[in-house]
Image (cartoon, rainbow, N blue to C red):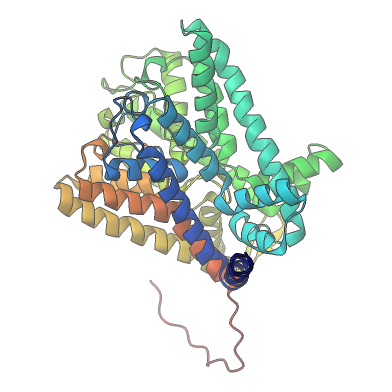
Length: 461
């Protein structure tokens, strides 16, 4: 007994030391372990509708897609997996949406009524909280807001599913599944036809749009808005710079995407062409919001024009807000890059927004995140081009969708050979943990140098 206790103590000391020295590395290790756990759960024979154990690559792909809140699938979720398998997928979405270290803090809070220093360090690195004292309140907000908004979306969807001639049990299950999947930007659907039969159904599509948009803003934004509203009311000027940049950029991307998708697909006979005016407006709004990392679709993505794919590629690569359920390089990264370009064009020495000056190390971090993300997409695209022999537009769409944890597909993912499935699985994992971890690792590093080299400007452009 003493040996077991000593071993546990030594293991805890090791974890604590690793958490202090490299929380990013520990986060990746834990995230990988959780993906393997859900893979094992899906490997059970009772997880499939046929009662036969699935192939490892299919279980692995589905587990990573769920935990990384992506939504890409190689088998049909509604027909291939049993009720137990769908529950496992839904649980994976919840865990992935919380974030592994945030979930660990939630469990620690529930057991000991407090969050230890190690959990605070880990959760702060994952949620972008600047002060460790805010971690406890942020964890509580994660629990309350995510559950409340998922429940809200489910309550809005439930009567609509009942009206659509579903039984009360089916309507409740589908409403809860869509509510959780929407807020966590997962893109998994529990119905065989998905949302395509409901292209013009405002009562069904609007709650899902709301869930996806709010979930992609990020928990720090929700925490800040709630805190300011509680103290001062709805006064935007008291919001933090991060909140202002996230909401402003997110809104602008939705409006721009809405207009461009509508213009490009308005007369396309394979997508918006046969729809009425109101249905086209809703379908284009839906198609503009989903690349933020939502992953749902009400029209056939494969039937869209290549120009629309290109617009979607750009929207997917940007993704959602920092510390959100969305993926991509994050909207604040894009905002900082655009502000830097604007400052350079004006000849300003400082990068400014909303009466605040943005540090130059934030710009360096943004450039690093964009470069790492683009490199990951490039490497995966080259691999899939060799594996599948498909054209670049199709492969690029699937790779960006996987990296940005979106889940939209032209149909290529379901037809991939095993090698291609492993490539996209790795890309989903990197997309969910890679850029975030890389950013956290760089942010925590501060090399102090006594001697600095002389400055000399290279020629740019």
